[in-house]
Amino acid sequence: MIRSLMLAYSFYYPLTMSLFWIAGGIIYFLRWERRAAKHTDPPILSQWPKMTLVVPCHNEGAQVRETLEYAAKQDYPDYEIIAIDDGSSDDTGTLLDQLTGVYPHLRVLHFPQNQGKAMGLRMAALAATSDFLICIDGDALLDRYAARWLMWHLATGPRVGAVTGNPRIRNRSTLLGRLQVGEFSSIIGLIKRAQRVYGRIFTVSGVIAGFRISALDKIGYWNTDMVTEDIDVSWRLQMDHWDIRYEPNALCWILMPETLRGLWKQRLRWAQGGVEVAGRYMGSMWHWRRRRMWLVLIEFLLSVLWSYVMLAVLLLSLCGLVVVLPPALRMPGPLPGWYGVILSALCIVQFVVSLMIDRRYEEQIGRQFFWIIWYPLVFWMIGMMTTCVALPKVLARRTRTRAVWESPDRGIA
Image 1 (cartoon, rainbow, N blue to C red):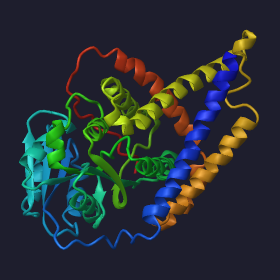
Image 2 (image 1 turned 90 degrees about the vertical axis):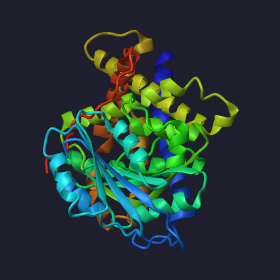
Image 3 (image 1 turned 180 degrees about the vertical axis):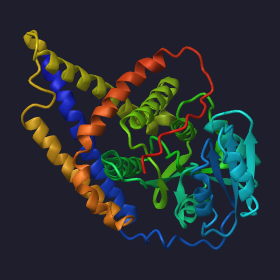
Image 4 (image 1 turned 180 degrees about the horizontal axis):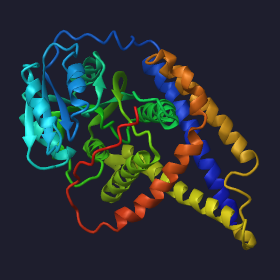
């Protein structure tokens, strides 16, 4: 009985979620994307409100000049840029001060010590002279029309508290880099489309997102003791009944880890952030007025359960090779027989659907198909392991401390 339940769950959970993401992505495409203009032809308003472009930085000396160059080229009529030097130990602060002479609408906030991204965003929101923020990372290259696409939602939707954009991978020199191109297209992009269809999004993208400052003020801005401030602020905005939207036309080119060590650290932080947020707000979620968040919470809890079930199935399969296990725990394999065939076929269908949709934003994305098909082998394993490590790590954390910057892996090339 136990054996059958474990094998069934390890198979039917990813099968069900993949079908859900495919259906949601297609519905989103047919409803919002099919007849929409290209990202180079953003919507037009008679009057565009002023916005503030926020760039928090910690040891971004190698990237920040290019980031601000792209930020200053935004096709938007009225905006300012606020960059935060958050206790950098390199030349980030000096470069930012120099760039104020190049870009007159740039202001720089200096923190003498590492305060963390959440505190930097808080201070920028308080220093802003507009009612809207667009936040990007210090290594992000913002598409020229991204601000217009994000601001269109905020300017026309009074209940829109945040809009998340569409990150694209810049560095593709290794297998891990190419796999992440497919991940952001076939997994992350498709998930956000499906979540937008049923009305709630798990998280805005920390690397590119727009916010209404009045909504942030109402919930108390970003919490400084959460590992992933983007997941936390997304849940609190939606629990306060603000709408969060996904705008795939708001493109932003980013650097991602291309080493297993860097990828592990990044995904462990993501997993830990999800567990922290779910644990903190689970008790206050079960009110009827917050029912639209139930699907987000339940899906996350089921994904955590699946990680542990898969880990148990894998370990029992390996143990069965060297010792004789009781029949109830004897596993023929993590995905025996036709299970693996069906999941592999469905993965390919999901990849094809996502690549067909994403051709609107990157015409050559189809060239990544060969690399994408290896995605489950690498990222499912990493996702499973990081979730299994993150849960006990969060449970063992007894005191809340400020989450500060750690210099990430920016890729090999």
